[in-house]
Length: 148
Ligand code: DQA
Image (cartoon, rainbow, N blue to C red; front, side, top):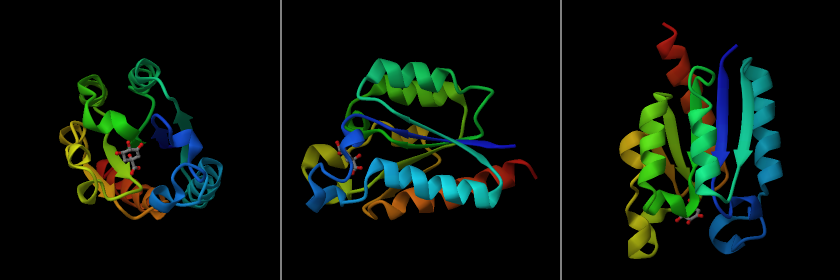
């Protein structure tokens, strides 16, 4: 059975209560519940990981090689400066979808640059928590296509 991993970076454990006017009121627990449901319906395994620590995220991604078929990642602020995250994604060779709840292109100037995007198959931004479900749908398609 295929395994899709959903990874949230720094501060995203506070989803639902952190700046709700920007990130919405849906909690990380609710996101996990919705995706778990989709995974069960579509016959794939799903695993979740959240960390506020860059190194823990890199270690986790390294451990996915040969195990995960797809990665959906909201890197939080690591998006804008973490070359080690970029390199970990490149090294893993796992198709990754980069996801942001907010539209990073419509906010502060420094948010408009992602150093992670070149390592991602695609990017979803600005669609709130729905983005996780859309990313899931897209990832199911990517995995299906790779399996011929
Ligand atoms: C974010 C956007 C980032 O700029 C920010 O640092 C986050 C969340 C988003 O989901 O919109 O932590 O990735």
